[in-house]
Length: 149
Image 1 (tube, rainbow, N blue to C red):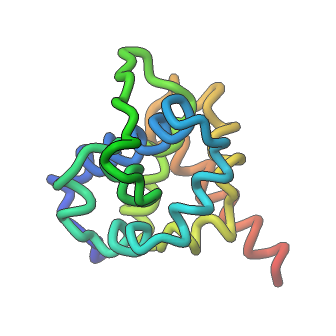
Image 2: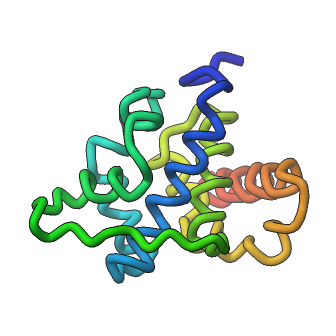
């Protein structure tokens, strides 16, 4: 399979997407679904999907959220990095892996599996091996395709 970017960047991409969602929710006060819609409509969603290394590795997750929202410098809220990983962080982390492995855009994934359903997988999947969550996402994707047909 051909991936959008080399696996060497995958962990950075996962961390970045997780931090972006966590920052948007906990520091900026967005509801996950509302922020994610903005992300999907931004140029950064497609650039991330295509493996643009500036988007994936050239900035932190908070910086990515700031660019997505086009926040002026004077209004930037410093990220409150928490050592505990939130549900939103895990959502971005697993979503980045699933997107990379399946070579789908985030928009395509969202049509099959809304972001809230991915977040709802947190318990129990955050304590399992990543392959369990990826298999569940594949199953959910297949069910969505059958329902559409």
